[in-house]
Amino acid sequence: MEDTKIIELLLARSETALSEITRKYGKLCLQVATNILGNRCDAEECVNDAYLALWRAIPPKRPQSLLAFLLRIVKNICINRYEYNTASKRNSNYTVCLEEMAYFLQADTSVEQEVEASLTTAYIEEFLDTLGSKDRVLFVRRYWYFDAFEHLALLTGMREGTVRVRLSRIREKLRKYLEERGVKL
Image (cartoon, rainbow, N blue to C red):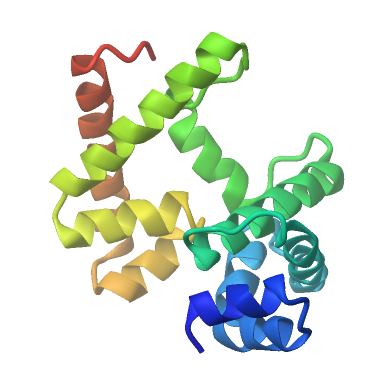
């Protein structure tokens, strides 16, 4: 079923929408949740919580991309669960991904910094357009889906070491790209 039809079902408060979302995006949501949490039971619970949050968000919201909207909800719920579960432990692929990108992420959130963060987001989207398809897949799968290096190696047919080096080079290119546009890192 098309996303627009699923959104219409959500707007009409039809429970069929949830079964369609589960059928269409359930595995992907579970994969993202598991990549963040490292625990399948917690991941399943967070995905179910995300479905409920989606149900409550639409209406009034009407997202342009149902998948992006849903994954954002899944990630936010999983991040909250992860922070609760780990409290100060460092043991997740999610933590490693954040550490790799810490140079590009802002910690403070004043209004000015939020505006700057949205500009940085736009610059990152522009940067992704400059990459070849394989590098773009590596970057997005690592830093959006939180895929492990081993999984990326299997996905792309590269060796794990090659994946690590390419991602390191992509991050360096991103750093230079952002600096050229005046983004303070």
